Length: 112
Image (cartoon, rainbow, N blue to C red; front, side, top):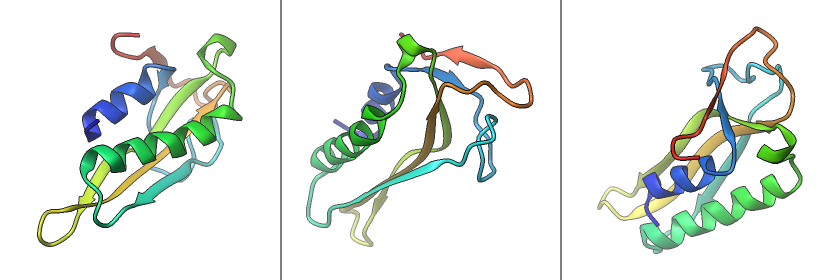
């Protein structure tokens, strides 16, 4: 799995809400940070670990069937060492059933 496939896989489970560039989503709730560091691991293993960390967070949240949406603050990104080796996957997001407090829209994920 690469970083683009990680994002696609996460988004396949939810409707996608309007992103913000602030500490709080349009619902008024704070974003959650998921960060996985794996020096010496390849991109595939690092992304799989990041998905596993996301899955732990998502297990305690409502799903699409319950009306939840995924709100991105930072899409999954892959940081590399100076020599180009994968080092860290980082993302900030929120899964929420709460509606947007400012009327922002929620759209369906691509291919969902």
